[in-house]
Image (cartoon, rainbow, N blue to C red):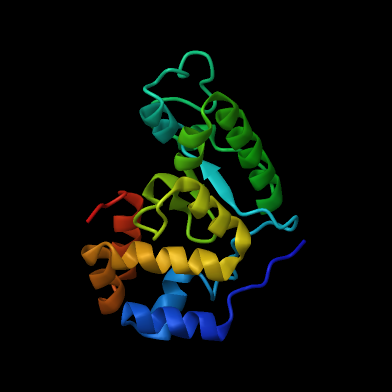
Length: 180
């Protein structure tokens, strides 16, 4: 079940809200690289951050479930696979396991969609609750883009780096989980 991709009107509206050029927005959205927010089955891309799950759950599951709850670094625990769909299958399995332990913590400890927005940042993404955020991540890429725009607008350093075209700084700030 494929989801509609981002349209030019979606991107133009987002660029106007962010006060940046369409080209700059396309650079950070990976438009030119052909990135997507969904796998071929229509599921949103996800990546469970086991270190974040550990933090949110008070390290309660670190010993019993180290594949989903652990200290940093997280990357050695990510699902492997030759294709995006294989990796996403593995990450959905990791999310299901973590959800069986603590559903809310698992959803908050997961990066979602095209922009890999962390669930615990759902309020920065314009959602009062994690369920609303997750529903938006499942809906379509336009909803994922709306969350991304809200996330950037909520963080002046991120917005500034986007507007000035400092893509390297923009990505550095997103990886350090900057908060306004």
